[in-house]
Image 1 (cartoon, rainbow, N blue to C red):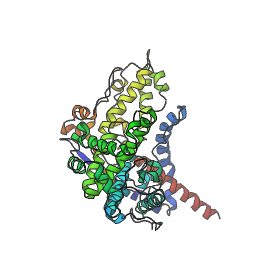
Image 2 (image 1 turned 180 degrees about the vertical axis):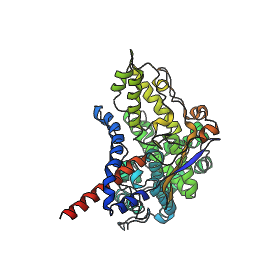
Image 3 (image 1 turned 30 degrees about the vertical axis):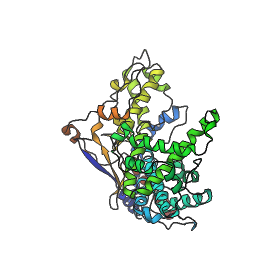
Image 4 (image 1 turned 120 degrees about the horizontal axis):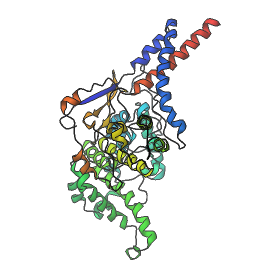
Length: 465
């Protein structure tokens, strides 16, 4: 990322329009099988792992529900609103437009942990915070929360966002209420915490230093604890039940603190702070789900005598991980460490990352089959909409480095140490990489071929009739 090359990758869906045009041409049907056959071979090879794995695993990347290239990406439908929500959606109009792009229908699941859900949750916090300027309330009641969340999603979907965001981001009406926090009134909030100090600390944060020093994060936690204490009789604080309940209450009160901050900052400034705090949390955890590693254990365990078989097995396993989610630089380090320790516990002592040339980039969705994976920056980022070219986002190409094989005694490194330890390739080496588009092309082509096949069958049926 520093001193390197970054490129914006565009998902051009005009190919589907071309396929639909071919649908009208009878001669195009004869060449269909050649296109479809090679694509299915690629996808079948990836599906072998799913068939042999005894555990449930996420589905491969199949964005077959991509919006039609003949329709605009935004304002495609009229939202059906309840008319009962009192939140001022106009106050976050531009943020909602960004959210609808970050959560665009076909790719929301694959951008969920790095873009879509953080942006979605931040927009909701700012929406309630800005509305509290008039209502003096930092939370909604249960009935209002249900209507407002429904309206919020309807507005996003009308601009092209996925219509299952509540499931993708585990979002519920309760997330818009005060939960178990005893304070939701603005005046009570400001009389309970040192609001001026909190604003001074969190009004503006350094996105890199905050993840290491947690200056704002700690201030938010302290404020939340003060709010939570208002629910208790101090003489009973040693009760184990109270202590257990207190943790949940503090977490609920953190939402209240976030909303108060959002009410005191301009939406752009609030987004900077809240997305930054979210990224600090997300970068500490690998978002991938690791299926059973028994096939790797058989091929690469102690006594391994066939390196080719071992590496083929590892590559098939990793190719399945590449269908799950885009990850950031720091998340890739977490994922490499997590999988490495999992393999070691299953008696794979050989450094298979080195043996099979596994890189950090291999833990993310691939940009093209032939070249490289896309590791997103560890800093907050958003997708970009070009109404001609489609959806794009910036990949950081500098983290094209071997995945580190962990030691069994290795402790998880802190994110601030990771950001220092990640080396970057020389600019010349990075510049040699040329990307034409995301690996999604293979699946998009397959989807297009399916459309064409249906058209050919339909044409044939008409002629026979």
